[in-house]
Amino acid sequence: MENLNQNKKGSFLPIIIVMIASLVIAGYWDKIPIIKDSVHAVLNPSAGALLNWNVTWGMMLIVLIISLITTLIQKYATDQKALKELRAEQKILQEEMKKFKDHPEKVAELSKKQMEFLPRTFRLTSRAILFTGIPFVLFFRWFTDVFTTMGDPIFFGFLSWFWFYFIFTIVFSGFLRKYMKVV
Picture 1: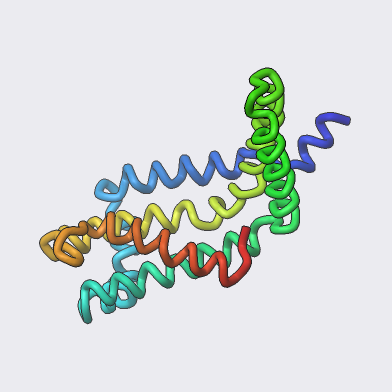
Picture 2: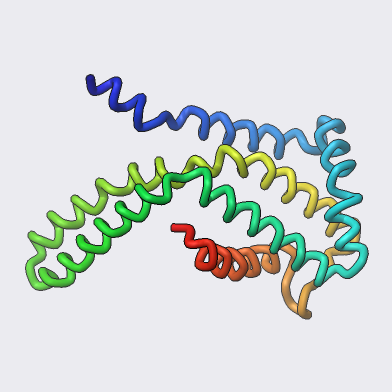
């Protein structure tokens, strides 16, 4: 019966496979030309055209599009209702912990309870990795090639492409998640 319940919860095997495939793709990017050439054939005329038009605004649009796609995948590939319920339970536990802040033994007990949420939360949120893991690796490898060829442009006078991507992904994703009500 317990084995049946574990099967219902889902397996981490597909996520592990995607992560390993992503590492293999990243590792063989320069060693197997078909990987690199195929990605460049697809992204150069689309995302590359945006960067050639205007590096800063083109990158901003690319980051916005990637953030939108990621947010949509997160919304529709995860069980939003279960996540909301889980977050509500976690919030209740945090409030309980605040009440008992002067009772370390009670806080420890509640902390242990809170740790039990981690595997469930990870299982619910990690499904999106199945759809985004490999494309992210391909995009990042492509970005590295393109920006190296461009002479490593600096955005706003001080940001490398990675930090530009990182910061604007957080900004755009925050707005999109709030607007689309994604947990």
